[in-house]
Image (cartoon, rainbow, N blue to C red; front, top):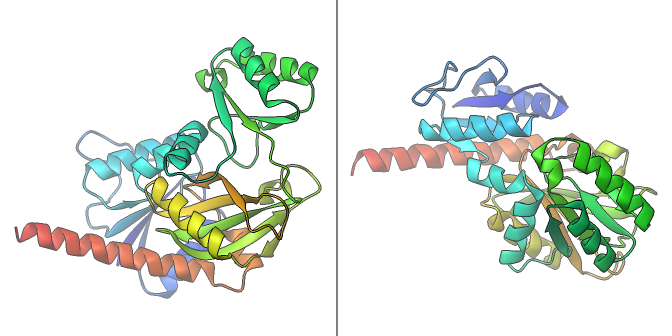
Length: 297
Protein backbone atom coordinates (compact mmCIF):
# COMPACT_ATOMS: atom_id res chain seq x y z
CA UNK A 1 0.00 0.00 0.00
CA UNK A 2 0.95 3.62 -0.42
CA UNK A 3 0.40 5.51 2.82
CA UNK A 4 0.89 9.21 3.41
CA UNK A 5 2.01 10.69 6.74
CA UNK A 6 0.84 14.28 7.20
CA UNK A 7 3.25 15.94 9.63
CA UNK A 8 4.96 19.12 10.75
CA UNK A 9 7.64 17.43 12.85
CA UNK A 10 8.78 13.83 13.05
CA UNK A 11 8.65 12.79 16.70
CA UNK A 12 9.29 9.38 18.27
CA UNK A 13 5.61 8.48 17.69
CA UNK A 14 5.96 9.05 13.94
CA UNK A 15 9.28 7.18 13.86
CA UNK A 16 7.60 4.14 15.45
CA UNK A 17 4.81 4.32 12.90
CA UNK A 18 7.16 4.81 9.94
CA UNK A 19 9.33 1.91 11.08
CA UNK A 20 6.38 -0.47 11.24
CA UNK A 21 5.00 0.64 7.87
CA UNK A 22 8.35 0.22 6.12
CA UNK A 23 9.01 -3.13 7.80
CA UNK A 24 5.80 -4.40 6.20
CA UNK A 25 6.88 -3.16 2.79
CA UNK A 26 4.46 -0.26 2.43
CA UNK A 27 5.47 2.77 0.41
CA UNK A 28 5.40 5.84 2.63
CA UNK A 29 5.04 9.43 1.46
CA UNK A 30 5.98 11.99 4.10
CA UNK A 31 3.93 15.17 3.60
CA UNK A 32 5.39 18.16 5.44
CA UNK A 33 2.49 20.62 5.73
CA UNK A 34 4.96 23.48 6.24
CA UNK A 35 6.12 23.10 2.65
CA UNK A 36 2.89 22.29 0.82
CA UNK A 37 0.04 24.42 -0.52
CA UNK A 38 -3.59 23.38 -0.64
CA UNK A 39 -5.85 24.76 -3.35
CA UNK A 40 -9.56 24.34 -3.93
CA UNK A 41 -9.03 21.53 -6.46
CA UNK A 42 -5.52 20.20 -5.84
CA UNK A 43 -2.41 20.39 -3.67
CA UNK A 44 1.31 20.64 -4.33
CA UNK A 45 1.67 17.40 -2.35
CA UNK A 46 1.72 14.22 -4.42
CA UNK A 47 -1.38 12.48 -3.02
CA UNK A 48 -3.10 11.13 -6.14
CA UNK A 49 -1.95 7.51 -5.71
CA UNK A 50 -2.13 7.28 -1.92
CA UNK A 51 -4.39 4.62 -0.43
CA UNK A 52 -4.76 6.56 2.82
CA UNK A 53 -3.24 9.55 4.64
CA UNK A 54 -2.60 9.58 8.39
CA UNK A 55 -2.80 12.97 10.08
CA UNK A 56 0.10 13.37 12.50
CA UNK A 57 0.33 17.16 12.49
CA UNK A 58 1.65 18.71 15.67
CA UNK A 59 -0.23 21.96 15.01
CA UNK A 60 -3.99 21.83 15.54
CA UNK A 61 -4.75 24.50 12.93
CA UNK A 62 -2.62 22.81 10.27
CA UNK A 63 -4.21 19.47 11.10
CA UNK A 64 -7.76 20.76 10.78
CA UNK A 65 -7.27 22.63 7.52
CA UNK A 66 -5.00 20.12 5.78
CA UNK A 67 -7.38 17.22 6.47
CA UNK A 68 -10.36 19.24 5.22
CA UNK A 69 -8.59 19.93 1.93
CA UNK A 70 -7.44 16.33 1.50
CA UNK A 71 -10.96 15.12 2.19
CA UNK A 72 -12.30 17.54 -0.42
CA UNK A 73 -9.99 15.94 -3.03
CA UNK A 74 -11.42 12.51 -2.22
CA UNK A 75 -8.25 11.30 -0.48
CA UNK A 76 -9.02 8.92 2.42
CA UNK A 77 -7.67 10.56 5.58
CA UNK A 78 -7.62 9.52 9.22
CA UNK A 79 -8.67 10.96 11.42
CA UNK A 80 -11.51 12.61 9.54
CA UNK A 81 -11.78 16.40 9.59
CA UNK A 82 -15.14 16.04 11.35
CA UNK A 83 -13.58 14.04 14.18
CA UNK A 84 -10.69 16.47 14.36
CA UNK A 85 -13.02 19.46 14.59
CA UNK A 86 -14.79 17.97 17.62
CA UNK A 87 -11.71 16.71 19.42
CA UNK A 88 -9.61 19.83 18.90
CA UNK A 89 -12.13 21.98 20.78
CA UNK A 90 -12.79 21.08 24.41
CA UNK A 91 -16.25 22.66 24.38
CA UNK A 92 -17.31 20.65 21.31
CA UNK A 93 -15.72 17.59 22.90
CA UNK A 94 -17.75 18.01 26.08
CA UNK A 95 -20.97 18.57 24.13
CA UNK A 96 -20.41 15.40 22.07
CA UNK A 97 -19.81 13.32 25.21
CA UNK A 98 -22.85 14.78 26.96
CA UNK A 99 -25.08 14.16 23.91
CA UNK A 100 -24.02 10.51 23.97
CA UNK A 101 -24.92 10.29 27.69
CA UNK A 102 -21.30 9.58 28.62
CA UNK A 103 -20.32 10.67 32.15
CA UNK A 104 -18.11 13.75 31.85
CA UNK A 105 -17.19 16.53 34.30
CA UNK A 106 -19.73 19.31 34.81
CA UNK A 107 -18.73 22.10 32.44
CA UNK A 108 -19.73 25.69 31.71
CA UNK A 109 -18.57 28.15 29.07
CA UNK A 110 -18.68 31.92 29.55
CA UNK A 111 -17.60 34.80 27.30
CA UNK A 112 -16.74 37.57 29.76
CA UNK A 113 -14.64 37.46 32.91
CA UNK A 114 -17.67 38.61 34.92
CA UNK A 115 -19.79 35.68 33.73
CA UNK A 116 -16.82 33.34 34.17
CA UNK A 117 -16.39 34.51 37.76
CA UNK A 118 -20.05 33.76 38.47
CA UNK A 119 -19.59 30.25 37.09
CA UNK A 120 -16.42 29.70 39.15
CA UNK A 121 -18.16 30.85 42.33
CA UNK A 122 -21.05 28.47 41.66
CA UNK A 123 -18.68 25.55 41.06
CA UNK A 124 -16.82 26.42 44.23
CA UNK A 125 -13.13 25.97 44.97
CA UNK A 126 -11.19 24.23 43.66
CA UNK A 127 -12.38 24.19 40.06
CA UNK A 128 -10.53 24.04 36.76
CA UNK A 129 -10.11 26.60 33.97
CA UNK A 130 -8.89 25.28 30.62
CA UNK A 131 -8.24 26.75 27.17
CA UNK A 132 -10.77 25.46 24.63
CA UNK A 133 -7.87 24.54 22.32
CA UNK A 134 -4.63 23.08 23.62
CA UNK A 135 -2.84 19.92 24.70
CA UNK A 136 -0.19 18.55 27.07
CA UNK A 137 -1.86 20.29 30.02
CA UNK A 138 -0.68 23.72 28.91
CA UNK A 139 -2.48 26.85 30.17
CA UNK A 140 -4.69 24.81 32.48
CA UNK A 141 -5.29 26.17 35.96
CA UNK A 142 -6.65 24.68 39.16
CA UNK A 143 -8.31 27.63 40.87
CA UNK A 144 -8.31 27.49 44.66
CA UNK A 145 -9.37 31.02 45.64
CA UNK A 146 -11.33 33.99 44.34
CA UNK A 147 -8.15 36.07 44.19
CA UNK A 148 -6.51 33.47 41.96
CA UNK A 149 -9.61 33.36 39.75
CA UNK A 150 -9.64 37.13 39.28
CA UNK A 151 -5.95 37.22 38.33
CA UNK A 152 -6.16 34.32 35.87
CA UNK A 153 -9.31 35.64 34.20
CA UNK A 154 -7.73 39.06 33.75
CA UNK A 155 -4.62 37.51 32.21
CA UNK A 156 -6.71 35.46 29.78
CA UNK A 157 -8.80 38.47 28.82
CA UNK A 158 -5.68 40.42 27.82
CA UNK A 159 -4.01 37.61 25.82
CA UNK A 160 -5.68 38.80 22.62
CA UNK A 161 -6.67 35.67 20.73
CA UNK A 162 -10.42 35.11 20.52
CA UNK A 163 -10.11 31.61 21.94
CA UNK A 164 -8.89 33.09 25.22
CA UNK A 165 -12.18 34.99 25.42
CA UNK A 166 -13.96 31.64 25.71
CA UNK A 167 -13.75 30.69 29.37
CA UNK A 168 -14.10 26.91 29.71
CA UNK A 169 -14.73 26.01 33.34
CA UNK A 170 -15.05 22.52 34.84
CA UNK A 171 -15.65 20.97 38.19
CA UNK A 172 -12.52 19.63 39.86
CA UNK A 173 -12.62 15.82 39.93
CA UNK A 174 -10.78 14.39 42.92
CA UNK A 175 -9.07 11.54 41.09
CA UNK A 176 -6.80 9.08 42.97
CA UNK A 177 -3.50 10.65 41.86
CA UNK A 178 -3.81 9.25 38.36
CA UNK A 179 -5.92 9.16 35.23
CA UNK A 180 -6.34 6.55 32.50
CA UNK A 181 -5.37 6.95 28.83
CA UNK A 182 -6.74 4.39 26.39
CA UNK A 183 -5.71 4.26 22.75
CA UNK A 184 -8.58 3.00 20.60
CA UNK A 185 -9.11 2.46 16.88
CA UNK A 186 -12.75 2.93 15.90
CA UNK A 187 -13.74 2.20 19.48
CA UNK A 188 -11.64 -0.96 19.91
CA UNK A 189 -8.99 -0.49 22.61
CA UNK A 190 -5.39 -1.15 21.56
CA UNK A 191 -3.87 -0.65 25.02
CA UNK A 192 -4.29 1.51 28.10
CA UNK A 193 -2.13 3.00 30.81
CA UNK A 194 -2.41 5.03 33.98
CA UNK A 195 -0.58 8.34 34.33
CA UNK A 196 0.28 9.08 37.97
CA UNK A 197 1.69 12.16 39.65
CA UNK A 198 1.64 14.07 42.94
CA UNK A 199 0.64 17.10 40.85
CA UNK A 200 -3.04 17.50 39.94
CA UNK A 201 -2.02 17.33 36.27
CA UNK A 202 -0.99 13.74 35.52
CA UNK A 203 -0.22 14.04 31.78
CA UNK A 204 2.82 12.08 30.60
CA UNK A 205 3.95 15.34 28.95
CA UNK A 206 3.99 16.87 32.45
CA UNK A 207 6.14 14.06 33.82
CA UNK A 208 3.41 11.68 34.95
CA UNK A 209 4.58 8.12 35.68
CA UNK A 210 3.03 5.63 33.27
CA UNK A 211 1.95 2.05 33.96
CA UNK A 212 -0.01 -0.49 31.91
CA UNK A 213 -3.70 -0.69 32.82
CA UNK A 214 -6.33 -3.37 32.16
CA UNK A 215 -9.65 -1.81 31.20
CA UNK A 216 -12.64 -3.34 33.01
CA UNK A 217 -16.03 -3.81 31.34
CA UNK A 218 -17.26 -0.35 32.36
CA UNK A 219 -14.15 1.36 30.98
CA UNK A 220 -14.32 -0.69 27.77
CA UNK A 221 -17.90 0.43 27.24
CA UNK A 222 -17.04 4.09 27.82
CA UNK A 223 -14.05 3.98 25.46
CA UNK A 224 -16.20 2.51 22.70
CA UNK A 225 -19.04 4.98 23.22
CA UNK A 226 -16.74 8.00 23.55
CA UNK A 227 -14.98 7.07 20.32
CA UNK A 228 -18.30 6.76 18.52
CA UNK A 229 -19.51 10.06 19.98
CA UNK A 230 -16.73 12.01 18.25
CA UNK A 231 -16.87 10.13 14.94
CA UNK A 232 -14.37 7.30 15.39
CA UNK A 233 -10.78 6.97 14.27
CA UNK A 234 -7.48 6.53 16.11
CA UNK A 235 -8.19 8.25 19.39
CA UNK A 236 -6.85 8.75 22.87
CA UNK A 237 -9.70 8.50 25.38
CA UNK A 238 -8.91 9.99 28.80
CA UNK A 239 -10.81 8.76 31.84
CA UNK A 240 -10.68 9.57 35.52
CA UNK A 241 -11.63 7.09 38.23
CA UNK A 242 -14.40 8.52 40.40
CA UNK A 243 -14.45 7.44 44.03
CA UNK A 244 -11.07 5.70 44.06
CA UNK A 245 -9.20 3.03 42.15
CA UNK A 246 -11.58 0.21 43.15
CA UNK A 247 -14.86 2.00 42.51
CA UNK A 248 -15.32 0.86 38.91
CA UNK A 249 -16.78 4.26 38.07
CA UNK A 250 -15.27 6.66 35.56
CA UNK A 251 -15.77 10.04 33.99
CA UNK A 252 -14.47 10.74 30.48
CA UNK A 253 -12.92 14.18 30.38
CA UNK A 254 -11.44 14.28 26.88
CA UNK A 255 -10.96 12.48 23.57
CA UNK A 256 -7.79 13.31 21.58
CA UNK A 257 -7.57 13.01 17.79
CA UNK A 258 -3.81 13.28 17.08
CA UNK A 259 -2.93 11.03 19.97
CA UNK A 260 0.67 10.34 20.95
CA UNK A 261 1.45 6.72 21.81
CA UNK A 262 5.19 6.46 22.56
CA UNK A 263 4.60 6.44 26.33
CA UNK A 264 1.86 3.84 25.96
CA UNK A 265 4.08 1.66 23.77
CA UNK A 266 6.80 1.78 26.42
CA UNK A 267 4.39 1.06 29.30
CA UNK A 268 2.41 -1.73 27.64
CA UNK A 269 3.34 -5.23 26.48
CA UNK A 270 1.21 -4.57 23.39
CA UNK A 271 3.08 -3.68 20.18
CA UNK A 272 1.16 -0.42 19.72
CA UNK A 273 2.59 0.62 16.32
CA UNK A 274 1.82 -2.85 14.93
CA UNK A 275 -1.81 -2.63 16.09
CA UNK A 276 -2.14 0.85 14.61
CA UNK A 277 -0.76 -0.31 11.25
CA UNK A 278 -3.12 -3.32 11.29
CA UNK A 279 -5.97 -0.82 11.57
CA UNK A 280 -4.56 1.47 8.86
CA UNK A 281 -4.29 -1.48 6.47
CA UNK A 282 -7.92 -2.37 7.15
CA UNK A 283 -9.06 1.24 6.68
CA UNK A 284 -7.15 1.59 3.40
CA UNK A 285 -8.59 -1.71 2.13
CA UNK A 286 -12.12 -0.63 3.08
CA UNK A 287 -11.65 2.72 1.30
CA UNK A 288 -10.42 0.92 -1.82
CA UNK A 289 -13.39 -1.46 -1.73
CA UNK A 290 -15.74 1.50 -1.38
CA UNK A 291 -14.22 3.21 -4.40
CA UNK A 292 -14.43 0.01 -6.44
CA UNK A 293 -18.10 -0.47 -5.52
CA UNK A 294 -18.89 3.13 -6.41
CA UNK A 295 -17.15 2.77 -9.78
CA UNK A 296 -19.44 -0.17 -10.66
CA UNK A 297 -22.67 1.67 -9.89
